[in-house]
Length: 518
Image (cartoon, rainbow, N blue to C red; front, side):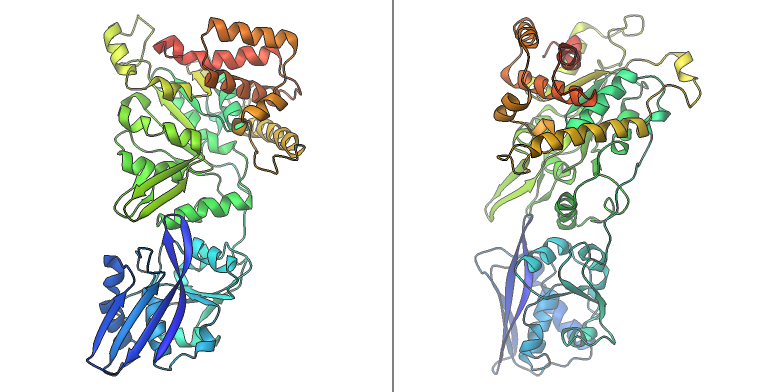
C-alpha cells in the first residue's frame, strides 16, 4: 500500500515542495525513513508512532518505509511530522488519495497527538500558492501568520484526530481560515517622537535625509546628547512598506522562528539593535543549519549599532560585503544559503573612550588613546556611511524649552520624508528601463546618477573642487551625490544646488573631524 503527501521544505530562505512517499507492506515490523534527513527528521519516527497511538489510531504490525524527496536536498525541521502521519493514514486507507491531491500538509506532532506550530510556514504557503495548490493544512497556531498570503485556502488543526476531517473538508472539527484573513495595516508612528528631543535640529535634518533616501548614518557625540534617542525615533518617520516588502520581511522572521506579524500589524519597519558583544554568526547569520542573522532581520528596516567603536573590528568588517550586495551568502557543505540584507545602517559612537573629545576642558584622553579607540572602525566602513552627523551637548535653555515650540517633531519630519519619497518614486517611474527596480536614492547606480543627478556648470566645478581638496574616493563622491539628491528632494527642488552639495559634504566630513579617516 502506497501513498504520497505534498509538504514544504526549507533551504535557507528558499522554499520548495517536497513529497512524502509512504509504503506499508507485510514483513518484519519496522519504521524506516530515508531521503538525506537531519536528526530532527529522523527523530520523527518515535514522535509519530506514539502520537498515532495516543490519538486512538492503531497500526497493524507491518513494515513502514518513508521517503522524502527530492533526496538530493538535506531535510531539517519538525514540519515533516504531520505529513508523514498523513501518509501512513493514507497508505492504510483511512484517507483517500483524492482528498490530499493539491493539498500541502505541514506541522509538528506532540506525543499526545497535538499539532504544534512550526517555523517557516509563511514561505511554505507562498510556495504552495505559487505551485497552484488549492489548500494548506497547518497547525492552528500558524493560521494568523499564514493568513498574510492571499489566494489559497488554509485549514488549521489542533490535533491529529482532526486530520481526517480536515482533508475531507468537514467543517465540524477542522478550523478553516479563508485567504486574506489577516489584514494589512498601514503602519502608524511608533516608538519615541522626535518632538521629545530638545535641540539637535541638525541631527534631525540628517535623520530625515537618511529616512527619505534610505541612507546609512553615523552619529558622533558625547554621552547623553541624544544619539540613541534619535536612532530610536527613526521608525516613526520611515514610510510604510509595500505588500511585497511585508511578505518578504515576514518570510525572514518566519524562517528564523520569530513572530512574523509583530511588526506588520499596525507597526512599521524592522528595527534591530544588537549588543556590541554580538558574534559574527549572530550578526550575519550562520550555524550548522544556517539561520538569518541580525542584518537579515533588519531587511527593509533599520540596523542600529550603538557604541560602534566597542564592536570588534572583525565583526564590523563583516558588514562590508552585505552593504554593497544587499544580501548575505553562507556557504556550507550542504549548499549555499542566501539571505536578503537590504537595510539602513544607523550607528552611534563616542569620539573617545571618555566621550568628551575634543572638549579639552573635560576630556583627559591622550591622542594615542583616541587613535586606538577609533582604530576599531576601519576606513572602508566609514566610507560606506552616507551621513555623519555631530550630536553636540544640549544647552540648558534648549533642554528646558516647553513642547509646542519650533522643534521638528515626527509628524513634520514624516510629512517631509513622504513628500521626498513621492518625488523619488515619480522620478524613477518615468524611466522605462528601471521597471520599478529602484525606489530610493541610495539605490542609484552610475547610470541613474548620470541621469538624475545632472549638475549645472557652477555645481560641477564646485564638486570638482571638493573632490580634489577633500581627496574623495570614487565611492564617497557617488555617495555624496546621492545624499545631495535626497537633500534637494527634501527641499522640493528638481535640481541639485551648491547648497545641497555643500551640506552633503559637511555631513560626510564630520567623522573626519575626529578620525581623519575620510
